[in-house]
Image 1 (cartoon, rainbow, N blue to C red):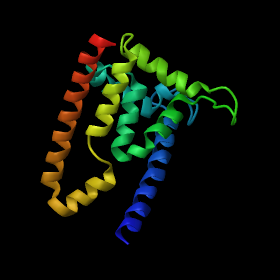
Image 2 (image 1 turned 180 degrees about the vertical axis):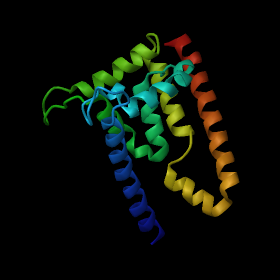
Image 3 (image 1 turned 90 degrees about the vertical axis):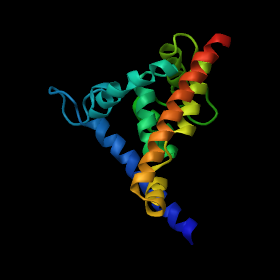
Image 4 (image 1 turned 120 degrees about the horizontal axis):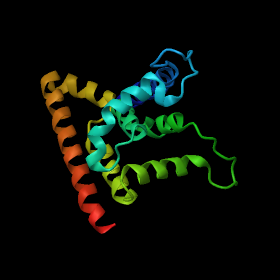
Length: 177
């Protein structure tokens, strides 16, 4: 019964997150664009992601597209790929055709942001994704169980461990790859 309740809550959070990403990508950050007309990098979503992206440069994935996916992952890790798909907005082929442009766009982003070391950058990204804060639904459950102060302490520790580990994975990995 608790599992079913959690899944109902989590699926609602995922749908709400995807809708929020779409809305933030549709709101222009500068005048001169109408609703939904601004390129993603000039939307509220893109500008906010550009502001936090430099924090991830030592880990090899300092592009705003990647940083924005991690912010969405804070709400629901399952929504990371869908947020990337919305950010890159590339067409995917029908079943059985050649691979689409989405994978190429993500690969190029890691290639550029890592200075030519995409494998350690991807490993660092995965480390960060798995080590940082769990989803908001889990944080809500933690708040009920252990209190807000301990939950916030856990979030802070998780972010420090995730960032430090990601930087170490990238910096050491680029020596070998």
